[in-house]
Length: 278
Ligand code: 8IG
Image (cartoon, rainbow, N blue to C red):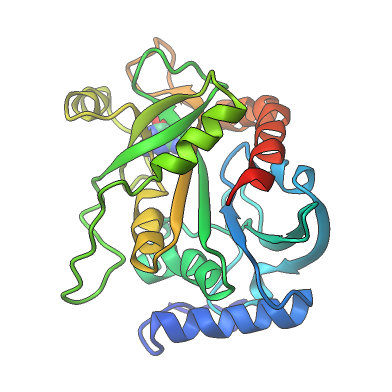
């Protein structure tokens, strides 16, 4: 399972919390920032937002941090960035997301979130690119995640630990986001495993069970963030109409292109919002 580029892959031989603590120590040492206050995972289209939020004080290659691996997906970054906000607080931007479909297990998927918590962050901002099921959600628009449906048949929580997921995506933080942009819609995110996109029938199903957005990340990460007591704020950039919602087939190039075009707007949104986070 491990490969040469990994210092320490997130696997069974070390506890998830111990590995996260080890990663946080390395981040503190390499960045010179002993504690971070807020953490963000930036998905497709959200990458530009990092520089807009404040002053970049450190960039660390993901491979240098225990448990992280560089992403193999085009359009996904591979570094951890420390940003100083104007009020002196620090945000940690995790540009190295491991997806469930990569096959490294759920521990690897949520290692970034656990590491963020171990660095001291109390708020986890999770962003992604996703498909729109709700026809009101046009490609190119960011949507606030109000709740999720986890269709991965997996959980990041191990053992008999019955974590409450009521109000998982903080109502307070969503209201704050809407105070910055009152045009933001809210929707229920449905996580499929991928890496294939859905069939049109699966997209209809996602809508019938209450979903507005389909994606391949975020739900498992949000659960892990809640387990460690972080507040969660989730955003999806709608990069494409989900399969069958529009007449044209999906392509990864379309997703990347829409993400690129939306970048300035998303960067402006996070630049305004993140300094307001409690
Ligand atoms: I970007 O249409 C992006 N990610 N499951 N479906 C799923 N994930 C996605 C999609 C999509 N678009």
